[in-house]
Image 1: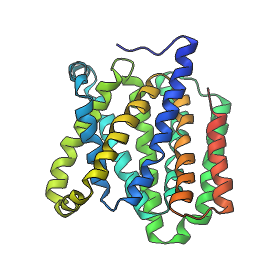
Image 2: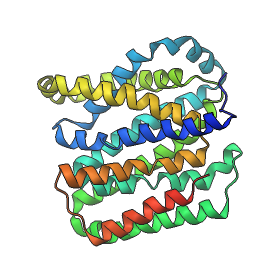
Image 3: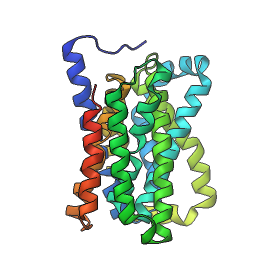
Image 4: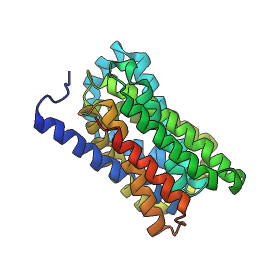
Length: 287
């Protein structure tokens, strides 16, 4: 059984680990946008590498399956959906906007932490509302007016946000009894079981096209499927749910900066103001 750190060093280490994982994950969308492959290929690659790298967690995973089968299945499915929806949004609209919309997830988290016994303060509620208002400002300029593709991207981003929140909350509960490597193995195995037949049957052409990008996919799998996944899950294990929600805002900050510098996306006043409100809301909600 794992426990959350009780000393000052542990409390400092957890946020630093989580921050490193979030910053690394912040570059994922840039890679997805630059490599012309279907979102399912990326998700399958991530989880395939992770399943191999964290296979040592199998013994503990079997014990967890006997105790909390429903929760194990729920967070595994949420993890799959969150990535597929996010990558689909990135393909459909501006990376910066898709990412900021996705990170309404902490709003869901801080509103429901009472379900796992954590106190919701006025400060966290206020900060969540600030972040949400920031998203409204962004979408008022770059939402419906940008056409059907943008609407599709927004819907995918919101779906990803909802499933991110479900995963965070579920992972926070199960990591009290399950080692971080076992959780990564769990979600990766479920993803492979679901996605391998799906890609083989319904996306054969996309799978064939992926062969030309094998070196890139290998790097993608190692960087995000193994390193970022470990840092992120270990960080969630060693921080509170509110801290996990707050650190999530490092992802949009990293992605927005990267999309402007590497993808040439436009930096507008609404994006600056709305993005600042989103990130400031996350900062104010810190535990």
